[in-house]
Length: 488
Image 1 (cartoon, rainbow, N blue to C red):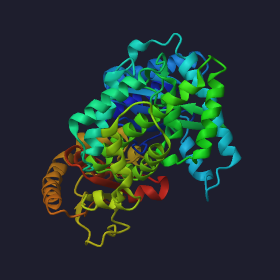
Image 2 (cartoon, rainbow, N blue to C red):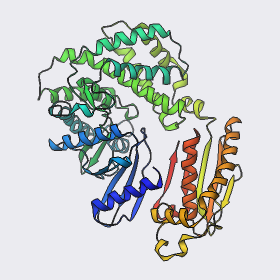
Image 3 (cartoon, helix red, strand yellow):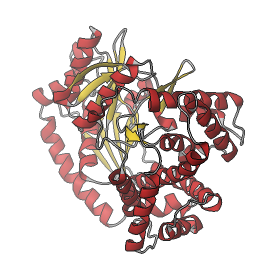
Image 4 (cartoon, rainbow, N blue to C red):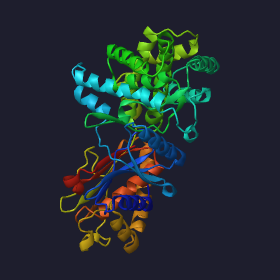
């Protein structure tokens, strides 16, 4: 999001809240390209969202209105500005089901309160799939209105190109494609006339005062009931014990039976097929984000997904013949390179990490933790200081007023052009030589205005130009607000 769009987002907040925005900061990125900003006033708070994909935004907004109209726990939509690809939603906090699980699932013990929370979440799922299906306008679905054969083949080829090929798993292309066709035809024999949430997993469920709230449903479409419960129970890093997965599936079937009659034997047969396609879809995502985009935290999910695959191969028999696919999956589970240690080390060992700092010269130049001697240090004190003006003293280089002053009253953008030229050339050289660390620091008097703006702009520039890992630290601000981000 550029400064003008950030200004529009603040304007949207102030019109809705009827008060000035006092603070805005970006939340850590996840698996999507959407950007989330927490905006706070004296009394009101909201999340601002920037999404370049207009159709995906409209799907989220329309679905959210529909879900709330029937009493489902989803965030309120406060305001939107389609022209600038931004909108405001209710701030439901930061406690996800996944973080709740991590904090409570320890030493192999899955406590009763965690089991109860999962069952509460599971009780909501049929309400989305069955009740919310009625009256939902599927014309807003994006990219397709159904999880049909084309959608399935997209997922399977995503797995093929971004996991199998990048991980160098051997397979016969034609035989694998034939198996994909057979597999899709089998899955589509299930009843596919319900709302399929698509990303019903622990990171997309927020807990507010002990109640689950649901986000990231913009990929929803018509589909089979089995897909979403498979997404929740085989959510890789959640690593739910298998006996509890079985118990939770029983609970889900019991909840679904409150709304319609199902053939349990047939349901379970198709369920394992949907578990498998969901695991492969997730592994395609881990491969794209990890192997291709070099984002290490996605690679850490691969060993858990491989463990889930191993369970399927050892315990499930599908009523179809898909030997080429089965052989490729077998290679994955038998390979030592997908262990918890080797999968990250082998892929990320040569990825360049650029640490970008803003700092105050009063506190000294930041130390280089890599031991390589400190890299570049750019002195911003030759640029007029907004901090000398009373109205900017309590602000910093994130605030639109400060950014406007720097862009209009100083030559800071020309200064940055010289920085880009020097740093770009070095990064290109470092990547070619497989160096792994570079540090770039910007200093000014207080480490609050000029250096912060320059560090943010360099991070933005490098993210757009290079496939590298970026760590951004505002050392003077961290003492009071904890501002620090890691991007890849």
